[in-house]
Image (cartoon, rainbow, N blue to C red):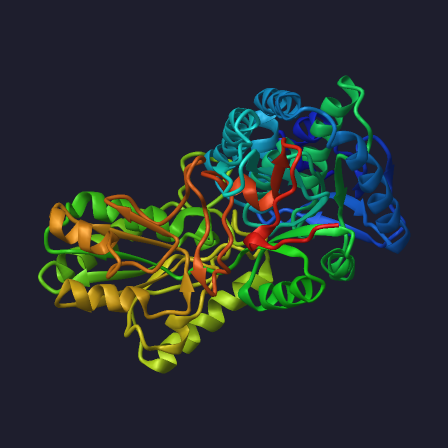
Length: 516
C-alpha cells in the first residue's frame, strides 16, 4: 500500500474489516474461494490502488448456488422471529464496525465521509426495521361461503434471492434487500459492482461472524465478486427465485425480460431524473439548501439526485442568483476531509460522461451559468474531480430527458403549477420528486392524482435520500420496484391461500353435485 493510503488511516480500516492486499471475491459464509481473473480496486479519492480481488469463475458460481440451496432447506424452518434475531445481531455488528465500514465506503466509492457513515446507518436502520417485521409476516383470514370451512392466506419464503447492486450505494442497497429477505426465510447471493468490491467483501466478512457465532450453515449469505457474465448467469438461473437489480434502465430492461421469460420475480431500481418545483410561495432559504445538497451530494451520483429545478417565474432570478453564489462556496476535494462538500466521481469513465453531457447540452442550446470543468492539480491527481455546474434549459432537450450520473443541474422556468407538474412528469423516469411551497393547496395538488407521477413525492424537503420504513422506488423507466420499508417484505415471499374443511361433508364449489 502506498504512503498516501496509510496517511488516510485506511490501512487500519482495511485490517479491521478483514481486507488484505490480495482478496478472494467469493464467500459462502466461511469458505473463501475464487477461480476467476484478478481485478484491482483504485480509489477515486487519490487514484491509489487499495487492494486486489480474485473474482468468481463459473465453477465458483455453481458452488455458491449449491451452498445457497442447501442452506435454504434449513434456514426456512427457523421461526421468523428467530431469523429476526440473526438480523438484529447483524445490526449490532454494523454498529461495531460503522466507522471502519463508513470510511471504506467513502474511500473506495468517493462519497463524503458523512455520507459513508450515513449509508452504514441506513444498514443499521433496515436491520432494526426488519427485526420488527419478523413478528408481523401476517396474512388475511376470510369467511368461506361453505359451512364448516375456514379460509386464510399465508406467506412462504421464495428460496434463493439474487441481489445485484450498483457502485453508488455499495453497502446500503444490499442490506435493504438482505435484511428483509432473511427474515422471510430466504437465502441471498450478492453480486456487487466491480467498481466497489472491497465494500462487499467487508460486509460479507461482518456477516460471516454472525453466521459462525450462531452455528448457522454457510450459504445463507454469499457474495460473488465477478464480471457481467456471472451476473448474467444469476439473472438466467431458474434456481434463483428473485432478482433484485439496481442499475441503469438499459440493463434493467434486459434483466426484466430475462427473469420474466423464466417466470421468476424481479425488483427493479433503475434511473431517476428528479425535479424540485420551487413555487412563488416557497421558503427560498430551504429551497436553496435542498437543491444544492440534492444536486451535488455524492457528486450527483445518486439515483435520487436533483437533476432539474422547475422554478416559478416570479422567483426565478432570485433562486438562480442565490444558487450561483452557493456553488461558488462549494469546497471540492478529499471526501474524508469533512470540510469538503463534494468528492470525486467514481472513475474517469464517469468524468467522460460528464463532459459529454455538457457538450450535448450546449449543442442543444443550454446556457451554462456555472460552467463545468475537470479539476486538475494538487489534490485532484486521480482525474475524477469535476466542478458542479448549472445550466438554463428547456425540458424538451434530449440531454435533459436522460439521467447523467454527475453534478449537472438544469433550471427550467414555469408560470402555473399545472405547467410545472406537467414538466416534472414529462421525462421517462419516475423516481423522486419534491415541491417547495408554504401553500397548502399547492402541496396537496402536487400529492394528488393530478400531481407527481413518481414513486416518491416530497413537500419541503429535497429529492435526495430516503428514510427506512417508507417503500423506496419509482415508476415508468425507474422500474416499479420497491425496497426498504412498508409491506415490501411481500416481494420476498410467495402467497398461498388455504382452505380447511372441518366437517364430515365435502360441498363442491358452485353447487356442483358429484355423488359416488
